[in-house]
Length: 293
Image 1: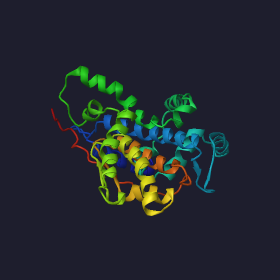
Image 2 (image 1 turned 45 degrees about the vertical axis):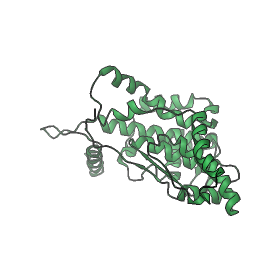
Image 3 (image 1 turned 60 degrees about the vertical axis):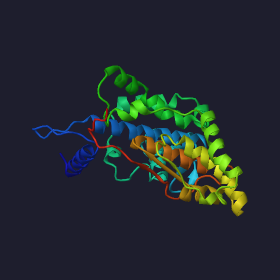
Image 4 (image 1 turned 180 degrees about the horizontal axis):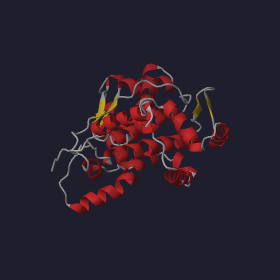
């Protein structure tokens, strides 16, 4: 084993312990958690790259110019890479808060057959999916569907590993709008608070960020009128000062953070991709291997 491989192994072992992997008496660690983490990280990176590309937001870092998937494929061929590997790297550089540059799982290379299967799955999705307003909200729901059924059918006690799957529930857009109109909308109509900038909105179970994104779309035009600022300035002000989210599953916070960034970049008149303020979304988590019910 080379020194570089040894360092990577040590980093992966440390990451596995953080995720709750147990070690047996021979020093071997469970690999379930690190496998799940690796799968999520690679899939999200590829998926977010497709969302960015289909909306004219995938940025080639050296030129700072948005490129299409066809253009990305040409660049990839020139570097001896496949399309999704290069597109994923570009997406990672655009989203440093979501994909940590030093994350060891992103240094793992999938077996060719597994990588090809992921690429075929992603490439086979219709373009319309990536321009639909609620598409990101369904990502986590579909990912967890099989696991949720397994846990519910097993009858086991619910713990840290099972809780995210069995408690996830996608909120339909009409429900989100109804709740926002009858809270935020009602308060604003009644004159409270005096300024929208005074609002601090926390979603303690933010999931994939559906409520946070919807609130951004409601607050931005209000701030534009109240403060006489541009759409871009209002988007960034809302992200920095108004919206906060917590979630027990770190993988969900990735989707929520991307959904908010994506909404800010695609907001009409906000001038597309640019560096955004730090997103106020965090994983509250639960202790690994904890049994709750």
